[in-house]
Amino acid sequence: MDYEKILGRKPYSLKKEEKSKLYGEWLSEMTAYHRQNCDVYRKFLNGLHIPEGVKQEEEKIPMLPVGVFKDMELKSVPNHMIQKTMTSSGTIGQKVSKIYLDADTATNQQRALAHIGADFFGTSRLPLLIMDRPDVLKNRNLFSARGAGILGFSIFSSKICYALNQDMELDVNGIEEFLIGCQGNRVLIFGFTYIIWKYFYEVLRRSERKFNLKNAILIHGGGWKKLQAESVSSDKFKNEIQEVIGIKTIHNYYGMAEQSGCIYMECSHGNLHASIYSDIITRRPEDFSPCNRGEKGIIQVLSPLPHSYPGHSILTEDEGIIMGEDDCPCGRLGKYFRVIGRISQAQIRGCSDTYEA
Image 1 (tube, rainbow, N blue to C red):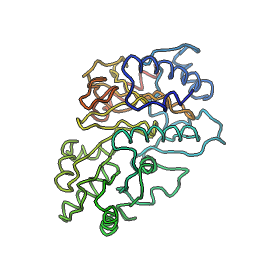
Image 2: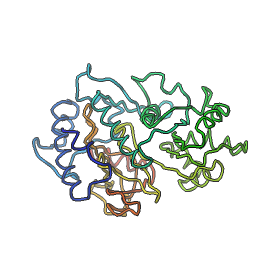
Image 3: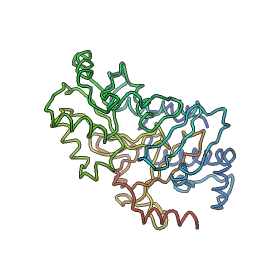
Image 4: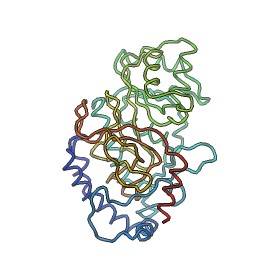
């Protein structure tokens, strides 16, 4: 795969017809590559009777259910080439996915993230306030999705401040000192959604303490399941953050450890956008046929960037709705969508049964 053909392009520059054609070519090539280099993936394709050497349209590319990354080691490069192992987020007692990254995959995913971020908040490095504690990155060769997010967004930073101490308490003095040093310039704030809500917003709401964050850009993702259980919607999250903390520019993003770097950023109109480095398809749970625009379905994520593991086509456990393509009012080309939430257990069993069949 010639990754310069992908990473040398602007992130939202491909129209529907061209992207669909290129993704059919790129993902067919990746399917053949991983089939040749990953025993588990080859057995999976053979079990589904997927013929070899066939170029397929994007919607026909075989997809791995995301759960297999929790149960199996999926590698397409020798062990000595693995430089980092990333784990997905999970509650205590749950299995986590393990994603094995070689140097090329890690670099390419970081480049994709850099291009996506630059499109939303520019190429200049900004002071970065991380809503987490420093020890999340204690081992950079084995790190969680939280750590991966911090490492990824650190490429946009001119200097870094961690907002929480080791006990997950707000470091008020440290934040104030950091902001004074920023001299009223733009500040980038990054963190997981639930952590921002629980350990930043709620603390400030109770204390009525104020920081000067009118020029801040807040990037957040993950952790929605806990907030939805507390009846905190995306709109409520934004409104409360704006009212209590004073941050007006807020971008949610959708992403996962299994395709790190290929995040789907939310524009000012509330839509999540697929860049040229990744794509999504929504599928009906009963037969996995593609949904129509505006129809709710299970999200499939695709990307040609995973080289060290077969993560180029993954069926997630999330539901979403593709709202349109190439015509978002923000001006970005590509599909734009909304995430509804996790699929029900009945649908998860249905997916499993279908794959077993």
